Image (cartoon, rainbow, N blue to C red):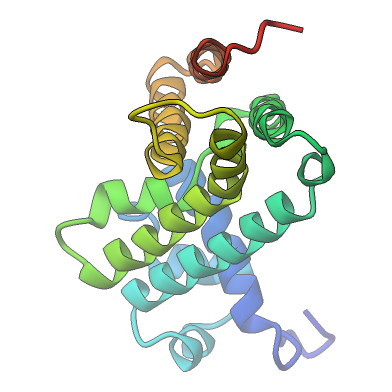
Length: 205
C-alpha cells in the first residue's frame, strides 16, 4: 500500500485475484470469504465490490485469469518448437511432471478446485471452468493431431487423447490432495506417456 494506506489505483482487482488464487488453492472456494480475500489483498470491502458484484463474480474472473496465465505459460514453452509432434507431446508431459515438484497447493488447478465445489450451485463458475478445461485441451490437441496425421492410429482422435490428458491432470491432482503426496499425480503422467508410446510405437528413450 502507499503511505495513506490505500492500494494504488488500478491494483486492487489484480491483488484480489492474486489473493484468491492462493487462498482457493489452499482452502477451497467455499471456505474463502470476502473478508479473507480483502485481508489477503490488503483492500477494503468497498474496493472488492467496486470490482466484483459478488464472490461468484470473483470466482469467474479468477478462473478466466487462471486460463489466460496458464495458457500463456504453455504457449511460450520450448517444447512447442520441437520438430516432431510426438516429441512435443512428451515435452508437454515433462513440463507437467516438473510442475509437480512444488507443494501440492501450488500445482493444484484453480479451475478444477473451484468447479468441484460449485459446478451445480453456480452456472457461471461451471462455464468458466469449462472454458479453462477446453483451453487445456488446446495446449496439446494440435500436437496430438499432427502426430496422428503422421502416424495413423485407427479409432483414436486428437480430441479424445487431449481429454485423456485432462483426466490424468485433474485426477492426479485429486489423488495428490487426498494422499498429501505428489507421487500419484506423477505416476498418472508416467502411465499416460507409457500408453502413448505403445499407441504410437515409440520406444522409451
